[in-house]
Length: 252
Length: 280
Image 1 (cartoon, one colour):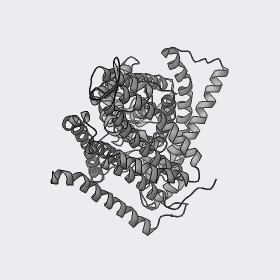
Image 2 (cartoon, chains in turn red, yellow; image 1 turned 60 degrees about the horizontal axis):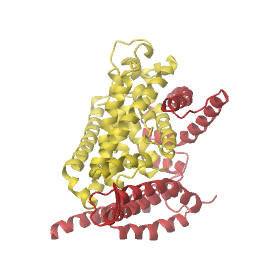
Image 3 (cartoon, each protein chain N blue to C red; image 1 turned 90 degrees about the vertical axis):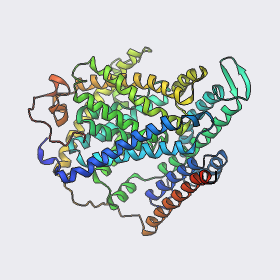
Image 4 (cartoon, one colour; image 1 turned 135 degrees about the horizontal axis):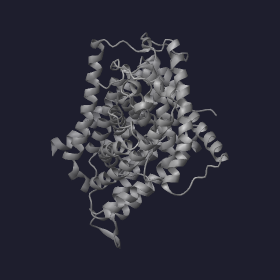
């Protein structure tokens, strides 16, 4: 599957984070909605994998939005405009508007960051971090963890099947669940620790702890222009946020 | 592990790192105090954008400073186990979250690393695992500082013997969970209006229907859920590490030196740790 890739991952991640910051700074539902419609939706559609990203956003944000709507829509003791009285629960206009504000913020937050993360190529990000001279231990931990996650999930599935073949049935009580969790996690952790100790020796033999600058197999896709663009984006966001937050205080 | 793999620990190189760790810790504490003491009036009306910005930058920046200060001091044996902890956190936390449980179970890896490799490695694992989890689930991102705190406290508890007896682990989990819940509540409130899973939100709704403010309700829910969650996590980790072969435990200088697992930690070593696995 071909993916849209115009900018360096670092630039895209920074742009996503700054957009989230702007939404937090402005803190109005109109702005959040505008960002959602004008930035997030086009970005998802043009990402080259709109279906996967749309599904991921729905899976991550959907339950949160629904539960937040239920929480603030039904239980908002500060609300005074009661739309419906249901005994202990009261539907209030203030609660609904608060749920809408938070819901829009959460949608932008999920949409922007997930689009950036899901179009991101982790090896490219790690290569950029190496080229920019980030701490090599950080690069190792991040890269290794991202690579390990599917491995851990696969191993957990295999161990679960093996234990089921030996007669593991997950009961309903909390103790039975705890026991089921342990029968899967214990062999999982032991296996992973054995792997880790082997990796420890291999890294040691390959000079992992030496402090010289690192090189990367992958070419540097970062450009001086993008480096400048990142600084400009940071500066503009910082100036705008300061102005937006301080002006109302100064002018009263 | 041979000492040739540990990094040089000249005091000149250590000082700025200690400074970073101290700054990160101070920033997190200051953020928490600011959110709790200065801002509660804002919750009744609408959200102050200042509060959510402070919670985002204070906790994320504090977490980043902590990681920046801790990482260079860690040994290779601690470093290789950190990705494992991170992957465990994310894999198990994702399952617990998608099942809509009232507890999170997303700290098993952090506590495991903290028990084996010490408080510093635990704190870095907690912060990094939430940062990486943010790539799959952005809602985990702002809780990075809370996760670092859990790792730090779990490591300190392990150092002082909380994992030498199986009945001590849930007690330590209760204390660590209560502190973690206190710290996580303002983040949840100011960033997302306390949105969580259906399970946790049902608990908040109960307190809200009694007329509690959102921060108070979320703090009570955090105290409840996090305590129960950490009790379960600490017990699970204790049972896992007891089942580990001695060879696997002995490769960690922290677990060996402080006899974290009591008689199970392998041979006794008289001299203190090389300083690499201790928090500054």
